[in-house]
Image (tube, rainbow, N blue to C red; front, side, top):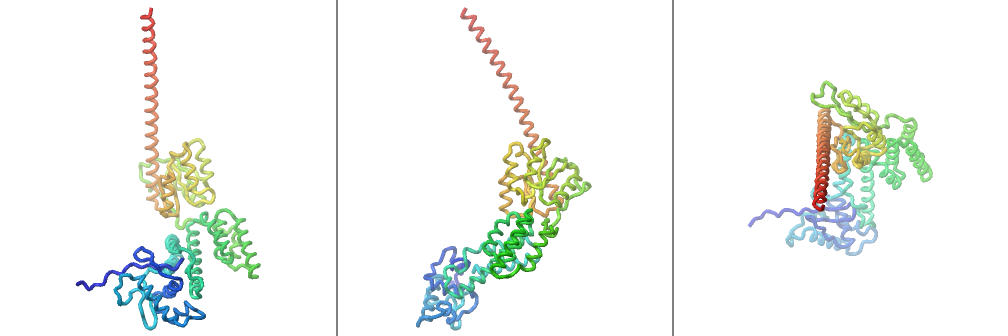
Amino acid sequence: MNDEAAPRALIRFRLLGQVEAWRDGERVELGGRKQRTALASLLVRAGRVVSLDQIVDDLWPEHPPARAAATVQVFVSNLRRALEPDRPRGAPGTVLVTASRGYQLAALPGSVDAQEFVRLAEQGRAALDGDDPERAAGVLRRALELWQGPALADVPDAPFARAEAARLDELRLGAVEDRIDADLELGRHSALVAELELQVLRHPMRERLRAQLMLALYRCGRQADALQAYRAGRRVLRDELGLEPGSALRELEKAVLRHDPDLAWEPPAPVMLPSAAEEPPGDEPGRVLVVDDSGVNRRLLVAALTELGHEVHAAENGRRALELLRDPGGYDLVLLDLMMPVMDGYATLAEIKADPVLDHIPVIMVSAVPELESVVRCIELGATDYLPKPFSAAVLRARLRSSLAAKRMRDVERGNLRRLEAVVADRESALRAEIAALRAEVDRVRTGEAR
């Protein structure tokens, strides 16, 4: 007989929302509210021994019943059967373990969502401090996605649960703020404004959120709105607490007023473009439109692409780009920045592809947002390519050359098709003339026979 233990079922526990347990993907029935509260008492201290007296105090903080300890033991026995239904009768539990006048919830690493959230939030913060905003934003999003609602939502009357929920909620808000800082570093200010306005409405006393809103508004060209956000926060603090905003918020207001250049966003790394001497032979220059709200980026791209022999024009936003594209002359390619405060790249791309006069022009999206959702959305809207920042000179050359070559091939095919259509039209006209002549001849013959 094989004495090896059966593989342990995968049990995941949730505290970030209602208290739940899932065994191999199936939800476990945890019983009534007091029994779930007993499990919550063990879960918030997962990996540690919790005394029987502590669990009793957590369940009945003021007036425990006479048989409180025995009731807790019944709860634990019921929870063991629910979590380990295949455990042989009399065998010790492997999830809820009895230990020295108490119990320990022996959860596998990563199986308690609250613990996993804290771990990921710390990783995200470390990445942000280490100047890796891209990784920080991704890790923090994963952490925040673990939340299914307010922490310990179905045991709110227990004092230990209220304290733990408050702790976790404060950590969640900190993770939200860290994620927003990462997104601001990545130039996503346009997409953040609506979220920040809602967060500030929910948490009007949090000066960090208000500062983030001010910065996002300012980078969107909304200086007056940024200053209004400051004044609104100052009124709240004075009316509610009798305090003035902190020094960081006051300094930010002064920086907004004087248009401090340090507030402007620039790509985290410069785009390295080739010189004319580095460009491989055989590339035929084209007429290129660069669309970017950053003056530095526009100047860099225009100068470098002009040196490569391209005829380059620039637009500071999507509206201006559409005006230029609809002027006579035409363009061979558009380099379009995704995140712009005035008509962003998504909207501009959609307008280009919806216009039958412009839809043949290849559009390369340029963005510091490499997430798959953004890539898929741009491709679905009709983008030829998606170029994440920062990119090397070799990558830019290859993408530009490929898009221009593909357009010229399509242009040749369209020209051939037009010529073929003209030939067919000529043949059709000649055929119609021949048919008309034959009909006239038939009519003459019939007229002669009738006579």
